[in-house]
Image (tube, rainbow, N blue to C red; front, side, top):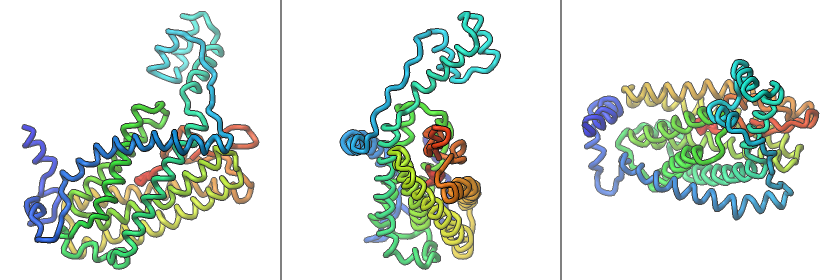
Length: 375
């Protein structure tokens, strides 16, 4: 039964071009290495190592940096212990009107007191500024490192400048060690992010981020399985570029360097436009959609992967519209008031940019990477 399910999931008719089998990719010529799906199993233990590295980095590097910038650990106000309200809170953090009325009668409290309890209880679980700073510093370090690595590898690759070479002799293309490291690092990072969601303080964007990470993991795994490594590396590198500036802007905001935060957000907006609305559609999507059609021809998984890339491009347009509104405010009003992407993009609960007029601190990841990161 397990074998039949595996055969159905990894159907050659679905994943590979016509007249190509998994056995063909299992037997490369001497000196040539093809991707093998079992190699991606290394990403699971690597994800655990990445998570441990994150904990060490936050404790030994990020937290001392936060203290140097006078970002102290918050001590949230504790809600009054109440078993009835806590039980409701565990199932629904913001009760509706009917539930509020029932709780008021049950506890003999007025409605404002019940609402205040839930507000304090929600804030109690919200991550503090120091924790958010440490998380952003960790992501900044990873995105910067993997982006530099990707650029260094792709800069000397002929298919970067002549994208038709992404499809010459496809799928029988040699996998270099640099490509494998790039894929393994990205995949293990997103596996670690998905696992850590169940350990970290649960935020209101939990489901959105879970879906985001699963979609990213699926795209990385699928492109590796059918040897779209050349185009896949381009996709990952393009998405990592703007995420560096987003995380840097968050850190500046948490450190209360408002002008630096505003400037970095404008730089993030420009880099987002260049990478995701120019390079991504006219360079990366063009080769996967048009040049691969001409040189290889469509097959079943080709439609799925291109469909997901086009959906991602539609999200880029929506996100950039919202980002541009914030960037314009930063330029003409001298401050970033609020990132309106916060309800639809990664880490929406973290509230990145402070409004000096109101004293609040709203915020704008991933990818498909993403981030974005919607990736």
